[in-house]
Length: 104
Length: 104
DNA sequence: GCGTTACATAAGTGTATGCTTATGTAACAA
DNA sequence: TTGTTACATAAGCATACACTTATGTAACGC
Image (tube, rainbow over all chains, first blue to last red; front, side, top):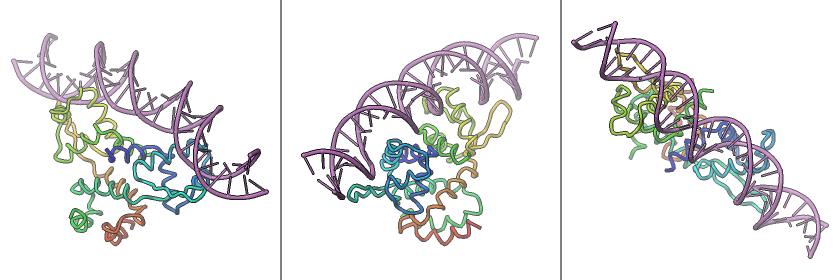
């Protein structure tokens, strides 16, 4: 179940930090490690988890592997969230209208 | 960090099932167990996790404790998601406009 | 009071998870 | 070819997690 992979992937603060970094712009695994105090294998394992959750996607570029945010994972969260729009607070109530289009 | 609590809470499929059941209508812990093949302590523990993540809220009613969806948790996910709206697929692109209001 | 019902909490246990060190593999440079 | 760089994978280990059984607590009926 991909939904499970997504929430499990985001349950780890280090992985959310990696994701956030990638959201600011795609980069390779080494660049991601900069200023993060994380070992190379740990980073590689985290990226593998994010990849299988479809939250990031990779692209080989010679010796480097460029990572970037995969919209697919975010879309799945948005759809999960949309199921419970009846409970969204009033501030976000206006979203309902547009979410109707999303369902089609 | 509440954000961590939320994603960790949703990382478990049983807890997501409980949440989904509550989204269809508030009910007490015993009613939640019906047709779920889960022990009473396990349910109680899951509800405690969902509660600390602000995904559900409780209300004592005599011997019973009625549970229902807490919009607060959902709101936090919506805000987390909103941070990455630049990567949302085209279908949801239209949401951007309304999300601007959400930020204020 | 006494028993029952609804739920929470404590303590113990197997498994999952995130890390480590060590090694493998593929692309480049000399 | 030889070495180096960038990354993935394997194996081992400590901790976290979801469950269990046992017990505690609070509200009700009698």
